[in-house]
Image (cartoon, rainbow, N blue to C red; front, top):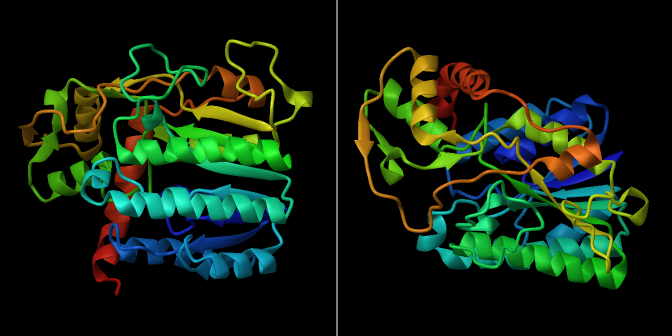
Length: 340
């Protein structure tokens, strides 16, 4: 099939594009190569994808409507996976307007063009941050999620709401999936695992926020990709409505559905630190700090809807996933430092 993926120079977009290319699909990758973090790593990801003859890169910003239109016209996609976004909970405190431009304006452009091209399925990357400090666990897609704690989460919720309206008006099948702390090889330098490993190898302290009392539902990247690939074949429709109304989110007004992608196995921050220490074979110098503004005490996914739709849920253990990241980092760090 022909896929149009935004954010292919990013962590998740790279892995999804590579999987689809390996499976024999055609992928057009749209990415702005923004300098939010080390652009060298983004160029490395696109260089790895360029080895596949079915990959076509398009470099431009989501807000550039003409560039996006031209790229999509050329690609003639059957499925769109919208992963590009201004990411990062903490950065949204410093530069909130960048989130409005990318996550709201850019997502609106994707919605309109997906409708114009009458794609079979539009898939949108949302976030567990939408649940805010929800006291009820595990987080279910049917939970009320109207109290986001950051501008990042608010823009993602806005994207979901716009998508539902557009899906209703133009009968566009849309799945919005909410990620839960994705990690693994080729991961983002602003995420905890990358920073912990880098600092420990350089004999620098690691910053542990919330005095280590937080917990996260970690999702290994290969598990996430497997879930997206399986969901891509389940475009929202009455024919695949799940009978259990306590978990189903398929709208009664539109071919629109929200799905968590998480394993439902939260890990405490201190257990996470110990797993990294075991993978590196060395202790960390720990700097205990208070919780940062916008952080939530825990995330905990209910995987019930994902499992009902696909027969699958993330299962990779943290020890296996962290070790895979460490092996990749040790091999790639020299190239990251040397690339222009």
